Length: 246
Image 1 (cartoon, rainbow, N blue to C red):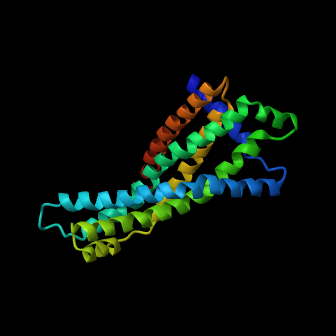
Image 2 (cartoon, rainbow, N blue to C red):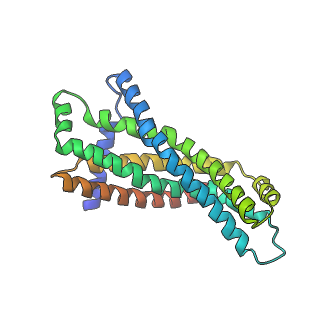
């Protein structure tokens, strides 16, 4: 029953969030700020993770191919499809759930316990719309770009691994990158990223918005937000894969 209580409470909060902003210029200014906070500031960690993921996938695939009947260009194909289908969306989403989600929950939770949200309500401002909508829209807008960058950088990381380790000839890796490419995989990856972006922002915002107590409770809300966001990401990943690739 506690689960249904939180689902209903979350749905009511989202109903308040997705209303027309009272002042569009203020919303647009907050939207741009959140793009920088949630997207641009996450670019560094996305690039670092993606380079090493691409390199590791390439090396592990190359070193585990024992049969001479398996062409080496399949290493490039494996690295490409692994980055597109799973790593650049799901794994990066889980990382951002920890980085972005904890930040959102802590920020809004601190505003709740310091009564800043109450002050906004007293002034007649829809605090849920004002605080949460720019974060959700900014993440949904910018995260697909992070996904594309992650895919590209991961493939480059695999290519660099072939150059520095001589696991396979680099030209064979490039051939695998071009072999049997399915454009729908990119669409599938972007759709998952958009869904993950919504979860990464809305769930932590919910936990922060209804935080009670003091600083200790804000920390607990932040932890719960990251855990629940990660679980939902994995659940959505399974459902989306079944619906789009089955």
